Length: 249
Image (cartoon, rainbow, N blue to C red; front, side):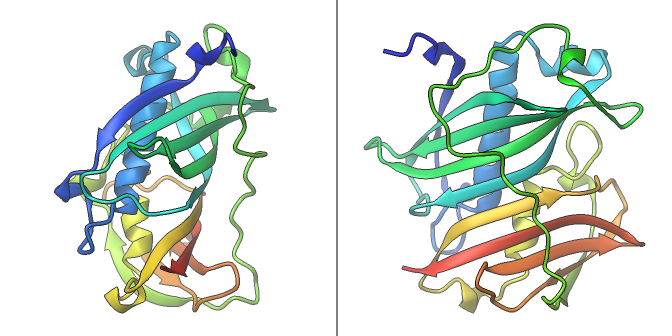
């Protein structure tokens, strides 16, 4: 038995009605939210609480996420989420996730890239800036570091809607919460696009933090072989690029 399984953080979440969409399937934003909470708890368990890091003007910034599902979470599911720090490459940290249902069947897995940042100077810090050592878990791997989402030049985008960052979307750093981008991406599609389909894969790269009052044009592509590409931009700034892949049930 691997004697380092203590490096894996595990927590359970029930999928409540308020976490689901009109089909009683777990919203993408809900999954992103519990993944974010698990990451926060995992880091705290290693001795680096969010409060301590904020006092040291440090914080974590997600850069890229690649999330895949074998089936969508459903209302009343009890999800067991496991996450671990896989290692670093330069200034980047990789965190992996696996999501299981109550029968211990894996229904989702993800790879993510994070950076440690100086929250005052908005500067990326090297891993050794963290006041202590983080022991990484190498007994499991979802895969290599995910690639940055880049929308191909030949893919045309059309405006879907406009969004302004308000109070409800802010996190404790005053930025649009990572999980809310799941809603922004799903909102580009009419309901008819979801009928008889499940979310198979979601990829996103966060390029610029959005703050209160920022306005962005959210644009999307037609269906491509990779999925539906989405971009949020405004005032010459690209905030994020993402890709949603749906599959027929």
